[in-house]
Length: 360
Image 1: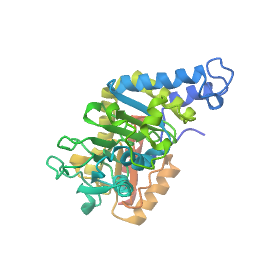
Image 2: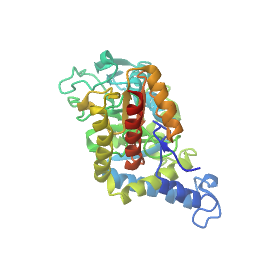
Image 3: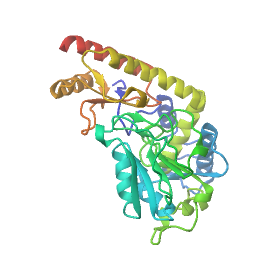
């Protein structure tokens, strides 16, 4: 069977080149006579894998030396608790709620201190990013939290909030490595890798070193202290070893593509193909305010639930997988991450045009 065009929001499409390379090394990684899956995380071979992955990520993102890179487990959802446990010194944090994940993060943080929702786009089903140029940032806030790209709703911050000097914490799960980023603007930037970088099971946390201390909330488990993992080079316990190995291959693939500036250009071209069609279609329409559109996740609807269901069914039969939208938005969603080729988006638009002609 040939490969389908996989528009899943995550776990998501990975570069075919990376998958083939991993397949070739499955039984024997570089003459070790074993798979990375079977390898001790304490071995010299694995130490080289994780150190090279970190070096390539630092190179790709321009991560300064005063930031730590941690490869952890528990997904982005575990960070919802880990962040307040480690950073809530004044027991206060400000959250900007632009979707389900920021909302869940704010609710989790509420278990550890006072959470102020200083902006939200819930009034219009999270279809836009609120103006964050002059927010009522709390004087005693330990940090300001955002989810930078909203997978479900297809919105993306084009400008970071004015945090008025407070630490910015950002969940970048679904836009990780899709464009250049100035790491120094954040105190913590983190994301689950299963959308744009690797297989599910790994989360990458990039955190300013001065924020990693023993001064955490009482009762914080050893495994949930950033210091535990920073001191051990992400090898305090057995890490998600195979996942990190695949991430490392994806970092090399990204460098080969020309780095993050080149990826941004490719991603803008890809997204434009789909958005341009949606803007002139008589059947389909996007659900997001144009100025806040994500390059990674594109939700769209026909306005008729039965027609939406018919489209998803026929698209699947034609080799376009995972186009069903999230239940809170309905309709369809195409996730067009780094590894989705432009041909995939072009083929989808051609299919949509045909469907529109046949069903109008």
